[in-house]
Length: 425
Ligand code: HAM
Image (cartoon, rainbow, N blue to C red):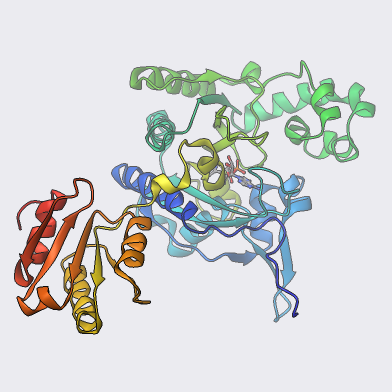
């Protein structure tokens, strides 16, 4: 027996009926994003490696340990995108930042991080995200955070909680760094090897290290919220007030740090305590990155964005995958050779009329064709045998009521639409 190929570790197939749940999540989120003015941007999966090192940060777990990086055939180092923000900013700059003072884009697609796979943590995972470039005002923070809350509500994430913080600007960061280094230095021996090194290089990263020894050692660490300058405090307080006014519930989290270096001011995360969700309970995260465009060689453009993990959202919403599959509208059962071609043509006509229609190409007995119709959840079954065809008609059966009647061939589409409640046309 030839050996069967297996999929790459940490990368999964999304097959029916699970894919129906994904489509529901994607379509719902997309609709809400479009309602908020975010248009779709599609960027390539591969980027030149320095883009991520410069934006996400050299001393982050993502850049140090998790990127799929390799030399392209022409020798240049490329990386499979571990997230979408850096690519969006790169595309924004290449297009010409000055084309529009406000740019609102959304995206959807696979991201790659070589993490240790577990429930809700994959090496290829999918994000739905959005980035708004060009606006400094805290109302856009409130609009974006509220939009995230609406997405999570609308797709039905179980037991969601929104946590909010501010990392401040470069000025606040200087004061915070000094306080944090002073706090961490005496605790250096308790930290993991990476964090011991990061105290000097990038102390903020010690705050989101996943190792238990580091979580214990940083208890009582100072918070950026303690050192915000007046402007950053004002921005944060306005945001909190706006969210209150919008009726979006949140908790200010003094210890919220995000695993990417580009953040300034607002940061947030939505977690879920739903049963299906494991330890990886962050469904969505985001924040402001007011310095990134400039750091990548562009003008000073403030920006904010978020990304939601589709795998984690799927674990956090209720219902069997199968409940997300749309039942088909109609199934055509053909009895006898004469009806075979007729059923093919009838299905074609009904599909051109916008209905979801199936038939059983294997033929077989009426009983086995009816079983197939049942399995596919057909709401209407059309039965055509030689007798009906001779009268240029077919039998229409409404599965929910068992009601049956003969319908003239030319009336089939409108009769089915009527029976489905689509109106008489
Ligand atoms: P992030 O927090 O690294 O942020 O990822 C956002 C979401 O992606 C997480 O909350 C999680 O749901 C999902 N996610 C991350 N890693 C994995 C994984 N290995 N397996 C499954 N799901 C995962 C960002 O990526 C930022 N770019 C978000 C952002 C946009 N900030 C500003 N704009």
